[in-house]
Figure: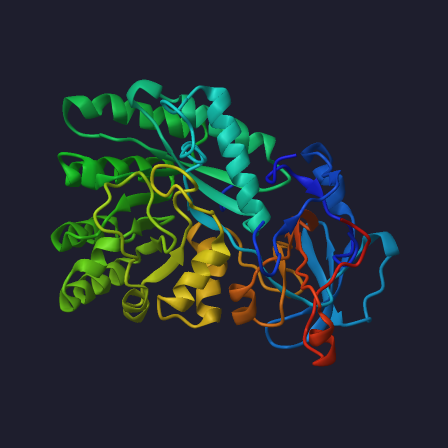
Length: 444
């Protein structure tokens, strides 16, 4: 069974529009044993009541959380919310958080780095890759994914159609939405791209994207995108390196005020500009209400590699720009070892980007959801039951060692990763009363 294949978690971790091997300590995900219920049963599962018992919150409280009909129904002190035994998940030792969302994925090109010969873009292959990538990201905790999909050239709308089919097949497990990414939109060559972009929106692409930097007429490209977005009421999500201050200034002037909003990224070029120039650009982006999605884990193949650097997140936030973090490439030409893990993105922002752990996690959770037009999530009654439980007692520990995770989407457990670390001659740890996680059931 592939590691990304959906599996049915046991109820206790101690037993076994938004948009629609080696020496030393052993650790790693263990295999789950039973398949998840199919998405066809998702509606009935959402209506069931689920109790999350003994979960720790970021404010230090230990609580029970009752879920029903896809929402958080109640939050109370531990032991205060009884529920039938079969609908209880023991979260003792876990930190309960709003689930991350993935604002910048590339499902059509994911998992292609290790292949031999040309990458296949047949519909079946693209659908398989997009599905597997979304499930990998779901296992990490992302219950919503925005996938940028290239259209045009020799492949036409085939990749878009395949990713939309993956979206339908994943309904009930994760919310996958698509961004149509044309290459050219201006001149004679761009006429076909513009027509195909219109067709992609009609097919079901919910966001309009592209890379103005690669068009001979970046301003004309942007004008075409904004006009079509205004016509259809679609959000815009554009690739740009951000190394040209004049181009960023024009983009801010043209895109400011567009509803439902404009996101740009990864903007690594801003980090290569003089500080005062980058600060002025950040002020312009903030004044226009543009959001920035940075890619701390690496780049994506949509842009030429120009010496990878992450966008200056602290500078942008200080200016008032709403910043979120995405994963970018997932084992494709942009990053052959990309993990697609939002908690790794948050870890890098905390370890290298100058953000506090809570701010870093917010960039992949609440800020990402807001950028994607998704409802806000808090661990409070009335909010959507989009949650992630990670073994640990505080955000910093979770970002450091996020091995065991339980993912909840629309009020039901949809993915689980369990890790066990064991040491030989562990009597030393016992004698010192050190924290220790061991096996709770027989096994090899």
